[in-house]
Image 1: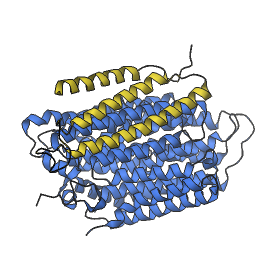
Image 2 (image 1 turned 180 degrees about the horizontal axis):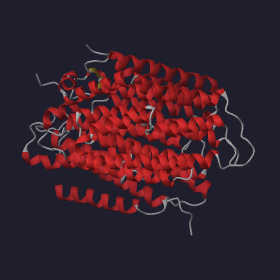
Image 3 (image 1 turned 135 degrees about the horizontal axis):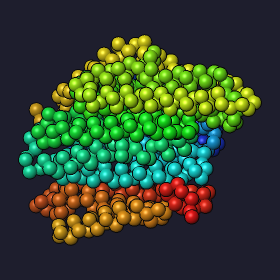
Image 4 (image 1 turned 60 degrees about the horizontal axis):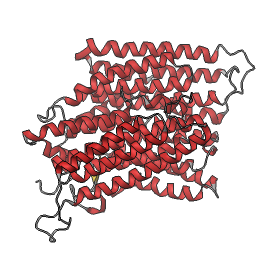
Length: 487
Length: 108
């Protein structure tokens, strides 16, 4: 069965983004409607993909057969990531529109849709060079979104962000050229097939390429020591944009999972466990760096940025072994941390619009408390279950991993408690304006998503386990590509 | 020829990395440009260096591999666009912030 509609999550935002670009100056209200309609349609498409996808489906661009043409493949993992992206984008977009955050500069909606197009493309493509192209699309849109509204501080942080990512893109190209010069192909399935019987003499080059690719994904996923761009960028970006960026770091995790299970699985003689060996120490250091950063943070956007680093550390700790249990736990935690991280940024947006030193409304404090509980991983929200799954999956190395995970959670608890009391109890000024319905709608939706993840943790984790099982048996994914020249 | 090609890529990368580590945005952008030149040549070499061979089947006995050439074209376009973006951003930051240091510190 072929699925021509697989390309819809890329084509739809691309078309609408073009229209939004034309309409931005003359009919801004129509651009809002387009963007809202597009994001809603993407969520509907993604949910349909999530519920109906069982075996991987392929779409051949221009009907060129793989590995000569580019193939998009939708499997359960891609469907999950599409759903996460759309389910995060819709409430954040509603927040941006309801509170006028999209009016602080031109072309917010066009950039927003291009960003979604890049994200969806990166999650769907089954070609390494096409992955690079979609990375660039989502990055160039994110440069615009990050500096949306302008300001000297924000532009300066933007330059650092762009420079780091340009270096990342250059490394990606070096890695892809190395892969192509050895393997003669960039189709992921074709690579997976050919890696199995790689001659002894070429193995060193492929190990080099694997490490270069890991570095690229580590920049995207904010792994220590390549995390340095994240706190400055996220803290300076407009809060609604930082909330959407909660899913951007997950692109790094997704790509690491895809390459680490399909192209460089740990049982492959050519590369062996080289990815795991590098990922685990980096992930543990990420936990420490993020936790100490959260402890030292003086403002809510800073604390939320470091919380994002800790969440990536937790996810990569679970990913590092590339075991089915670890991947299932990581995916559940990624789903949770996408919503929880965005929630913290939306709350910082609401706090930032009220004058400094004024007494913030109690409802905002309640929202912050909920977000902090979810982020730190205390019961009863899904953060607790996510951490529990990760702890369970890493039980064989408990002596090394558990102290780091639990210690990071404790430091985050301290940091967020202190920040919360500073923010809500210390100010003695006049009371700030109470929250309006438009302001709480999106945060409450995100909390509802977290509650749903908690209540339906059983089915959700079962689904993640099915995805992990799919990943450990790449044969159907390879078969979906219908490679020319292989039976 | 391989020696010349490899040396050129190495020299470009060296220059790029050195300039990129400078504190001001202009040398940093030049460094990024040098790095992208280096990687474009590197991509080109991924299809093997084949002198006097068009990437069209039937024109020569051993046609060159067309795919790296397509990849290089894509990479050139993207790095060109990205350079334009970072130049515009740096100009904006220079005009709004009053100096062009990239480390977030104010000039002494």
